[in-house]
Image (cartoon, rainbow, N blue to C red; front, side):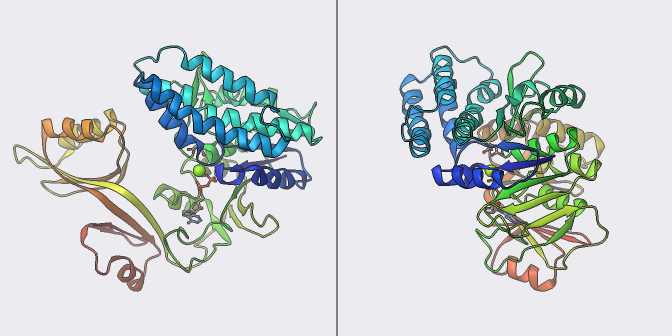
Length: 415
Ligand code: ADP
Ligand code: ASP
Ligand code: MG
């Protein structure tokens, strides 16, 4: 049994869905397919959720229009009529009913209840399409199988319950092909949770681990894992084979191609993961597996944009030692700000993190206890297997606000 995962870019329109369908048909294996929200729909659902949370009726209706138009265009393309997908219509009515109520005061909870419709609608349409095309497919609601705690927007997997429910659901007795949603989970009270943005890769790995899959393939719009994001670096090269450990590090430092939590569950059971192109499905892609030593000795570049770089110093000039570190880190933790880089000296603690909607509140909280300076909209560049030339290429002509260089990795905060 194999697991395939398709992200939003692969199912962004009718042609995309047809292409994914043909890849699935050619699998020649029992298959569990994980699919994300179509195109950039998760962003559109975030806009909808903001309006819903702010109880702004006009904006809710305004945000719903592009969501419905987008999906109905795809349904029309696939079936010839915008009304043809029964499952889609059911979920849209469910969502509209929900939006007739009143939002609670828990932003993260509401977020998961609303944004999850991206994956529900996407898999609803594709399941109906596959059935119409004669595929022997069984749609599963992953919220009943992938059980989590109630840390909304960043839920943690309950492995014991998830194993129990997934093994019951994915028996391949009644179908040779299952279709389910990435990114979503459910609490033991059956409330919807999500695993964090871009979390569908992680869903595929969870299923692969629990079901002892032969392998897991994540189908992307790139030929495999490259030594940089081709959207900002010209002349990338593909890495054909890479160890779990190296790939974990790349994703940890922010290489967007794989969600950081994805590889550990696979490594634990030695299940290989392929990163392949849905544009060129027969090409080899990248294999991530157990192997010794470094793959290809090319520098690998990872860029994180829209970073806030903050420098924190105690008011009383005390040193940054254990007690102060605990105080600082607990404020980060309280606001769930994930540090992409941290560094401390005798009197300062510095960190880089992604700008988010509550960054202002977080900075205010820090300001109450510490002297705080910060720069916004900076970039964090990580170079693995760096060379002097690679460092020069990335930093020349730029103002370096901070740097951190170890034996294998060089990191720069740049304005
Ligand atoms: P998904 O369709 O699964 O959501 P993503 O858009 O999240 O896929 O990830 C694929 C994108 O990741 C690529 O289009 C590419 O721009 C970007 N990317 C960033 N770093 C790398 C890298 N090292 N190798 C390949 N792609 C990368
Ligand atoms: N749809 C979700 C997102 O865009 C999950 C994913 O695509 O992996 O973040
Ligand atoms: Mg994505």
